[in-house]
Length: 224
Ligand code: ADP
Ligand code: AMP
Image: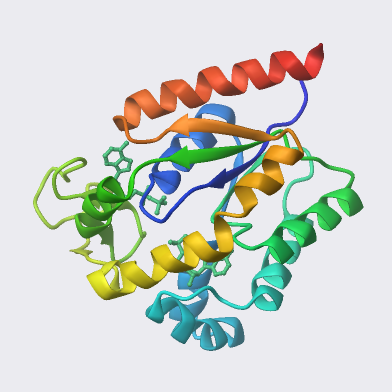
């Protein structure tokens, strides 16, 4: 069976991280989430974290050189025999081109880019209600995905907090960054014949079902 190598594309709050976790469980894929990697670098106080911190807190994209270096290292040290899910990368045209070059270098290729299509009002509701575990970063939502005990993580009982960049003014900046720099990648992947649109406005279970059906189709087409 050919490898599943996926890119998840869509605005912040579209549900990419939520589905990435399910996909990596369902298909045994390596999860590569740039937001998580950067937040970890910030909390470790590494050089990368120090350079990236202000951008993240302000809702701006981190410069391409930093992020590309981080991803290239991650892909090179990852398991070459297991597929991967890229969540939050690429987010600019130069990042998409760098990914292309790196995959060619590694002799790998993308199976599909899944576009999480969801309207802005829904994204705002999802981001304003998102809460994350201070320890593991695991995601919840105050209405759509409640923890068993209010304000506490189901996995380890740690405190749940709102991400600093989920505050309203930061969200506005993040959506502007998305529209200006990331949205053009829709055309880029469409031209390559890799884009698959997912109706991400539905419930998390429905979105998962649509992704599974879409991937089954993509694999069938690959075999033809
Ligand atoms: P992204 O990784 O795209 O930024 P997340 O997966 O973190 O988005 O989801 C954003 C918020 O929306 C989280 O609080 C999550 O629990 C919630 N969420 C995710 N998918 C859905 C869905 N299909 N319906 C309702 N809420 C969702
Ligand atoms: P996320 O968790 O995916 O919402 O990402 C959180 C923040 O990390 C973003 O607002 C950016 O500041 C930064 N970030 C994550 N991925 C990238 C990327 N591919 N390029 C630039 N900045 C990124």
